[in-house]
Length: 102
Image (cartoon, rainbow, N blue to C red; front, side):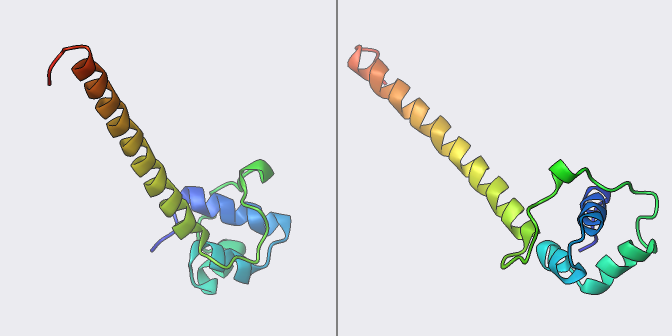
């Protein structure tokens, strides 16, 4: 999967911070060659490095950061759906107790 410009910016920021290319590759679940291409300017030459406060903590990484981010986004969406459903059930129960029927 190709890295987006936003991800390339993070790669450049991590490189500037001194992270190892192998750690960066592991974070993104990418081949180390893609990181080397970014490092040499072959890929994303016009993309500016992300600021230090936008970078993940330094590696090594035992799980792909990209996968972890997607999992977090999915879990957040599920949490929001569960919270919304629970609120609807609570409102239904409250209206049933008030004689609102259902």
